[in-house]
Length: 100
Length: 138
Length: 359
Image (tube, chains in turn blue, brown, red):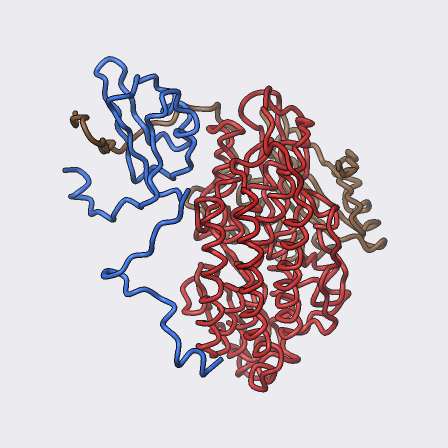
């Protein structure tokens, strides 16, 4: 075991330089392809953390990525299949960047 | 498979004697749990021996009723009883080691003592637009 | 009588990832009495049933604990299914068993690493966690999440695993098993590990039963009890026996958990071999009306979900008794009489998960 550890490559990645390939089907972050969206508010109703806000009148769709728990419930329920679960995580942000 | 779960309702005065019987028969105290309902309070004492699950249920009219402690029989009951006291504000008398409300350090005292009607959750933070391709932010 | 001092231990302590407080009454270097206090991470999740409907509560249940996440979700769903008399497809039962055992491996490897770190064997800690990473990769590939699986749902599972992936899992598990054999040699045979763990913190068989200890803590004291014998999920379809040890000391607890690692890999193989074809979920209609005590075996021991519904969308009461809460009485009974230097390690042997405990 000692020899193996000495002569094998490290088990970790040099993170900022090398990132791991995301797995297929990994729950990373949510995007809405808004041009297909019908603003039916189903995702807003199904969201367990109330992270999604849809306005039918103004035709806006917004998600609070800090509240979102990437549970996939909205993607499952979307009738237009315009919500998509990306396999990549949303990058970390500061509060100032968020409110921008 | 549905496992058989016996449920026996008892009154406060016979509690300690019943629990002592379970102790003599070498049952394990699985949990003590309190349920606050609009019109009454239930306390469940669960026991287990060789996967046989038995449940004693104590029904109280309100949280002023004195509940005798069973921690003199099952020592580990004191943790459950202190928890119930700290969360529900029940009046449990004679706990072997009474923390008097300092076992569970909650921000609100007796956090589970109230039983409010369901309220609509309010969104406090301003949502952030996360739109791909053609969509324009608000 | 020599002078007694009280040493506050925690809520912040290098060995504790989570806050629990112990007042240690000391006589020189020996502990005379230990008084625990909790509540620093109380989130009131049980109270959330009043706001979230019973299907949404699955997500809350999964987030009670970050390590035994899947089994929390499974227990909750099991309870609701029993109340509502839902017949879950058999494939879903097998998938649930598969994920439960994967999460058991990852939890036990995490614990073995932490305990190695607590007794000062840093490289063993690193190796345990290196292997754990491969288990997490399998979990992510099959469920989409690394720790929060999100794959349990009332009425079945949210995802299916295709047969090609199942074959890949067997290959990966075989590889992981080989590496686990290497580290388990060190845990079980190394001289310094034995010196540190053997004969420390003995919990007798009678005490373990009467103090209501659960899980590996109980089985290390020679009591044959494992909630998986209640045959929830697919545990009734596979051959297995609870892993036990007789001594009741810290070393016995390590033995039990190492044994369960290999038991889990064996179970995974059996589950994949016997996995039937078919759907993985059924449609759920109506609302739960009734009550049930759902009991399952987590990596840390028996967990109890008391669920009570009144026919509306919101449950009346959800009460969770987690294994760590049941093991706190046992730890306070075995702490007296041991050296102060052993306290952190002793506390770790119950595999404390305080966020779990306080919900």
